[in-house]
Length: 342
Image (cartoon, rainbow, N blue to C red; front, top):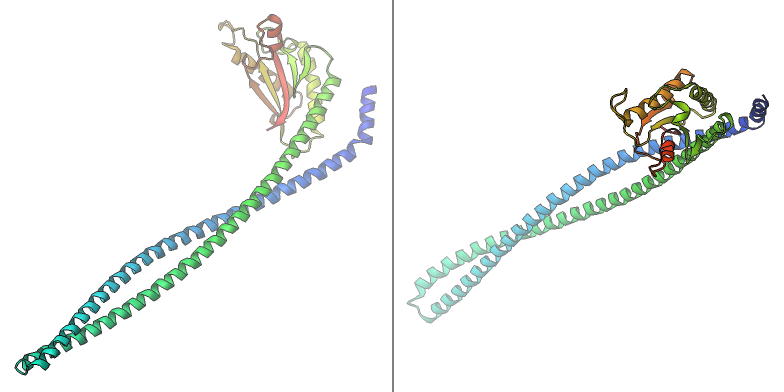
């Protein structure tokens, strides 16, 4: 009665303010998580769009590079043709000069020379026209190459700007990730605080016995407290202790905010002695699982929500003591309770 009166006084003086502060902190955390999720969505859309733009830019650059190579090849061909035409023109002019000299040297060769000179003059005019067209083509190709180079430079600038935006987006994502990690760490610390409070209450309401103790972040019941040897049926003494445990869980869940998705994990463990295989259970796996399930079902029958409980069997494969003695085996036969996140 005195213990109940002290708890009631403590709630009046302490818990309301604490719960208000905790609610405010949780609202802030939920707000930060919502902002992070929204930012992640927006940044993902932006990065996806940028990747598409980058792919299009790279494709255009490849096409322009191929066109530039083709135009360079055409320009080289035109330049080669022009050089050939100029060589032919030079040869024709040399022939014309030679014939004119022959004309001046003898009248008898005059008629033939005149005919030859007329032919050469026509060829020279034709060659000049061809050369002029070749020069025009070369000039046009040079202009096209210059335009292609400008387009490639513009695309490279756009690509550089897009990469800079990507780096900025990655920096923002990393910053949001760090903030989320901080928020998650705060939630873990908060759950650890409730776990510490839960274990403290269990110390108060459960009898201070050697076979009921805390090991790390788990509350440990030796199997002999709860079950007969080789059985998964909770004995009378064990039902009394488990009823106290159920009351403590029901009281604690009223104080844990609904945003914390907590569960109480009930782990069954056995020693390393193999079962005969002729009884109800073939091996220690089945026995440890059945005992954990029996505790879970008992807690549900006494008001603990089923969605807050998990049963797991570990057989003999997670021992506390590997000495191989009877005392070590007794310590390894146990039920462990752990308050954790789902």
